[in-house]
Image (tube, rainbow, N blue to C red; front, side, top):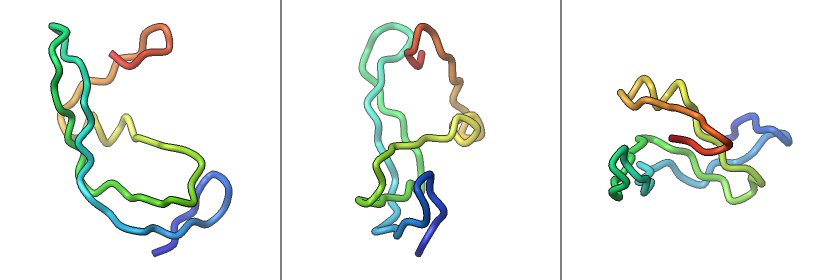
Length: 68
């Protein structure tokens, strides 16, 4: 399935749930699960939607170039 990317159209190899290790507000390791993430080995960039994370119930904060 092709999608429009930053550098043109890209082919999607597969879609799966992404399990991303993050630190919680207490500094403990936690897992952030984002469903239906597209993977394209041709892409030079990794993108994540803050709006999608908020729709999933996560709070997104940026501080000094870090996501908190």
